[in-house]
Length: 471
Ligand SMILES: Cc1cc2nc3c(=O)[nH]c(=O)nc-3n(C[C@H](O)[C@H](O)[C@H](O)COP(=O)(O)OP(=O)(O)OC[C@H]3O[C@@H](n4cnc5c(N)ncnc54)[C@H](O)[C@@H]3O)c2cc1C
Image (cartoon, rainbow, N blue to C red; front, top):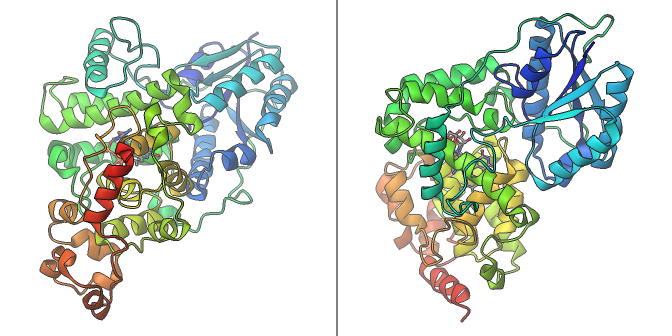
């Protein structure tokens, strides 16, 4: 009789989990669940301690949910990625499993790992598409190539979605238990990944994610088109850590957004329409990493930008990392990242552009720093965002479009609320003073308790234009 093994990876939920549901349908003789702790792989991928801590807390939660379905979640540890196939094989054989199910991970290293697992297992290994709304390969141009520009991708994405709308499915019913099998204790800490961050910032669990989604739909989605650009507000869902760890499914998100959008994927109301577009960006960047694997191997999508003479400037990079640039909104954003593991999208674009255009420092350094600090770090979205901001990627900003950090502050933090929240040395400043910072001399800034601007924006802009033009 079939007894499947479900190997959880970045899909830490029971609700609408494609691999779990497929396995449950075949579990005549019970079902075994597994998660492999893989610190060597996490280190190699620069996964942030705050993210690993979030995963562990979600695993504990998942284990409880699975127990209520009579499924025991087992834990194995693989010190290096090369150890993973043997760990999965051993668990499957030890517990008499007849097949293995997992949701597909599309990145290069993960795909190679799964090839090795398949070879080691000696059992059927079923990989399911679950992570994005439409799997890579399903949205192609008329000439059967991958899209490299978002707008036509989205048009086709909407057509495919409308033809077969994905329907979220609930967790399986309780199964027949595997006799004598007890769930493992989930560790609270992994060496090298202890997070100093307050866990209450990112509470774990499918219930939390579902409530967050419901609150966002009730309170913010209608104003999202404008609200999403104002970091001082809670105008976005803050669901990214939950989506990245798979604590909530994108199909669940799409289904409720569609309901709030008069039943439409597009052409309904401006807020929900725009939010559904963000889910499409998430799909788009995943499709790009599969179609153009070089982007996840540290290479630019636009090969010609390999010639940009990025500056080797460790002291300047360190100031950017620390949020000590002397540009209030950039500093506030970097400090938000350090304090919470998360940064608002408008500010991710601003700080990425500041690093690559004002400091002319290689986008790969920023991409890596983000991964090392983000609770929602995701290779495809992070790489896409960095390459967009640095004008090296698909859909990239043209290199001559460079955000002015002062103008961005006036436009997106017009009362200085966000800056005062995160930069204590500016808390007592009037809004007028904050927004005319550009005109203050270095000595005036010092007198008022804020450091000098680390670059002259106009001169930096000219330097970058010349660098991109190859002058
Ligand atoms: C330089 C840079 C780096 C980024 N790194 C990451 C990352 O590592 N992980 C990550 O999830 N997002 C990343 N993003 C995209 C975006 O900033 C975050 O997804 C968003 O800020 C998360 O907040 P939210 O959940 O409130 O988003 P909402 O505005 O509520 O959007 C809903 C969901 O859509 C998805 N989404 C939204 N915008 C984007 C986008 N531009 N690209 C891809 N997916 C998107 C996210 O899953 C998000 O949770 C990055 C953007 C930039 C510019």
